[in-house]
Image (cartoon, rainbow over all chains, first blue to last red; front, side):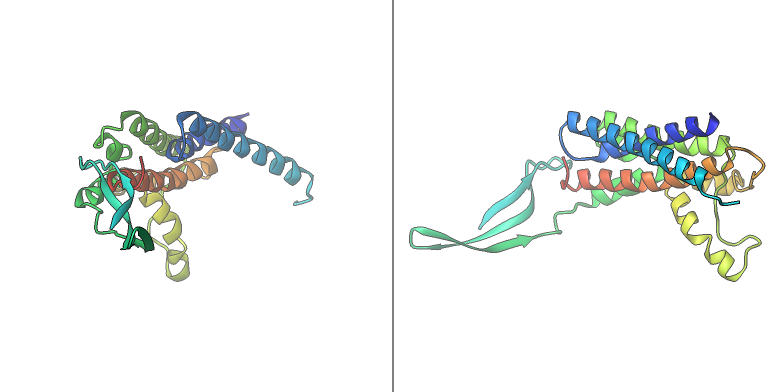
Length: 57
Length: 169
């Protein structure tokens, strides 16, 4: 659970910065920030499950 | 000669020229000859704001009275840097016990950490956060937080610079 929490926290802070420096209206910035946050989480979870099934050790 | 890219600048000018449309009159018609770009409009104040934005995350926006933007960017970078240290991350630096290629490999992460500005310099002067704590579960997360905090501050610095130079609203 610690890993998921820190990963989500990292995604949230990065989403805030990316959304803030993005161009467009406030609404477009908010949507972009949320999109970045969601994409970070989704990609991390997908990669996590892919790596789980790979025989790496 | 007409003016094309005309934006309000943070320096107080009503309109700072960014691009110029070169137009010639031929009888009753106007002929567009091209577009001239000018970088001469970048004021010294923009460079100063860029440096202050790097030195103290958020300061570049506060100096331009962009309170919300400064709070969001500065707050995110400060939080990421401090939390990175608290959860066991470590900062990188050149020198120390590393020799040759190993020392060179420290250059990239060090330049990312260096984006933290005075936060990094303070840690370097007080020798804080350079010790590895690989036994902690969140050690890798801490490293990532510290690296990305610096990189995000570079982004915030460019944003503050662009606003001061009148390239961004």
